[in-house]
Image 1 (cartoon, rainbow over the protein chains, first blue to last red):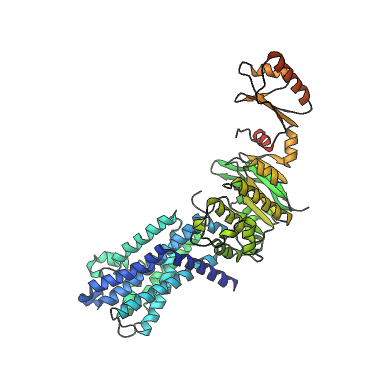
Image 2 (cartoon, chains in turn brown, blue):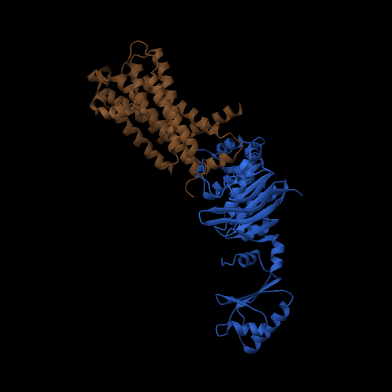
Length: 259
Length: 302
């Protein structure tokens, strides 16, 4: 019970700072939403986009699904990196480690917080897609989206924790995060249909964490009948998450790197 | 009286540097124990071993009866830390930050009362990003004491304080001590150590070079210091011969630590001064201070 209470107060603490900081809100919500509005408007006449080889879906399903996945990566990966590195370099994590609390409650708090803001992002994206661009949303698609969002938050949090050992300042985190997100998004069928990419690049992207998530979210939104959850996505993101958590466990530093 | 801290033959190396070199001391329950030394003397490393952040290469440390490396939650519940350098999320208010940290402890102090103790009551609902460096340092102190610790570590707590704030802070520490908190303090302010510490240890190059109460350390040096400016045309050896004691001369100031012979020495000096018509400019006859102890023990000029 104490663990849960501590996790929630940590999540609330993060959420309060998030709501007070214009920069993080712009990065996490305004940017993906803005891209959704612009790209869907520009490509609306396309009608159908090839989301994968021999698999065409509507432009709005393509962009709503892909950009939601992109927003999750951008927000969670960057957010966790900046929050953890910032807290570490300020000496807060050192202080936290010396306090009579289970260290895991900090991590759980981060995940909870990111689940909350990610759900808010998904909600806003789906509201715009359906109200403005007429995307038909079914209940089972929303359930699938919910499950993929949880998976994405877990996976991107884990990867962010695993790289914090290399990130020396929060400023570095806030430039590395968007760089990784934008680079991956070009190879993962978020902005551009994957059939414009070289085959080998598509093959590699299939095993990186963004492509499976983007593709699963796109197909959840595109199908007129239920699709179920894609096992491949859970496998790829699950392996990334497990390996990253293991790496983070070995390399994570509670004390400031700069001394 | 029981010891809250026992340290034996503690050694810690960083590569070739021996940061802490065979250090032993004990801190009694209810006392304020000071670790003095220049920057890099090994104070912070010693404290970090006691806090459980660093693993010693040799020797043992026991804090509240426990090896700090294996200190569990109920052990950490009894310990407060004021770290040497830290910063806070600028977007939260002082009260929000303190409330979160207070929730980590089993018997926390009231947040408003803690703010009162460190003199931040009027900043309670200010965002931390709008506070000055000295005010942030008070948050550090507030976080150190909010868990109602039995043992409090203070690593150079008043660095960056103005003289008034420093005096107010000393009163806070004395109040905590009266209420039964044992305190370990590092500082390089001699005045602070002399005022606060029941006992202190002076560290230099990783070793403890002097230990005891500040009065005992001062008395051990001798009762009195004589100091004056050496006239430019007088050789140091000549003045030593006149006075019958060895003066150390540094920056043209002659100084000596004296015991009972102080009156005779003064008489000889003044007689010589009158008969040769050479005034002894800036002549001082003072009790030695902790600063003299420190300079003598660490062999450094400050």
